[in-house]
Image 1 (cartoon, rainbow, N blue to C red):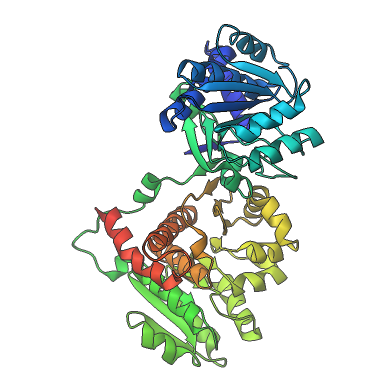
Image 2 (image 1 turned 120 degrees about the vertical axis):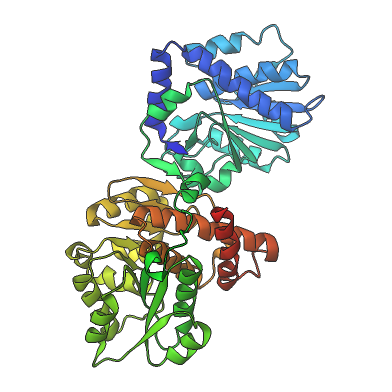
Length: 504
């Protein structure tokens, strides 16, 4: 599913106008879609519906919705919280309420009454700013938004909650906190990024009459991963095949005290269909890992022979995962350097491999191996030598710039994990939940991506599919066990059911 930024949606609307669909018609369709959603999901007869309308076209959408809701039997009130409309089409649709039961009040004329309307509304509809908003609301609008958020009404936002920057998801001070956002034509970038994502509530995409062929033609370098894209990664297995046809993954993981990371990475790779998993682990943890994973083959690393051992282990490997629980010792750094210099097939860097790469990011450009990096926000901050706050406020921009600069596929984990390709394409993941925020979840994801890489999937394709399935496994665990008690190992046990679904 395409996701548009402000400029792209404006361009799309202009394309529609150029094709003969007036802006006024688009506004009528948008307002009608907003009213239809409210009327079909809530009992509105004899309920007070208060539409907070601004002076731009988002307010115009609200005027149309007010008229439609009036005919459906609601007690409809427009609160002009930012003055009279300024655009010609918004003025025109406001004039059309004259012969209805809709009442309109201006905050400039009776501030206390407008705030009383907000407090007593049954349904509160935000049509103040729309996608063009930047910066922070002025003091009066801040008071309006704060009052709205305190209201016990059902809260609906038109297109995007007011106070959110469309392209970044940034909220400077306060924004409308919706139960549902009815967004027009397609999802907007902010609706998949924190903190905006939480403020949007459930996002419903409404058709406003822009032809599908125009939407298909409009450029969008951001998408939301869809199930069909994940399904396309899987092909039926042919009878006349062997383990060699399904990849050979080398996992260089674990250290003393961190055996579990290696176990979870290896087990997730096995559950992802990898033909052969080869675990290269230090002798200190070999008995623990081998005691829990019987399917892999093992290389027990020792300092004196390590480079020769890695050479042999890399001979048949079709991909490599390095870093899970590995530590950042001199020996670990030597192993990372050697693999990046010597291996020519896809390599995934996770956890401690990322922390070591952060000390010298030239390593990422000097290798000829296709790279996948899977940082959480703290690791991303170390790679960029910045703060976690800066990363979280600029996830899209920083991920895209880093992937393009270093020629890597970047998986920036977190709420709304995103996958950035070296060519600037970004996929935002819609699956997953807060119960996955536990040590070990990243090791599971690394094993899943590594397993798909070993089977010949491209770095972007492998990362996108694995992140989606990883989140689905987390959602299944949350439904079955609850977010509090679920564990990363529980997620691995969900993988057979998910893969079975896609096989079918």
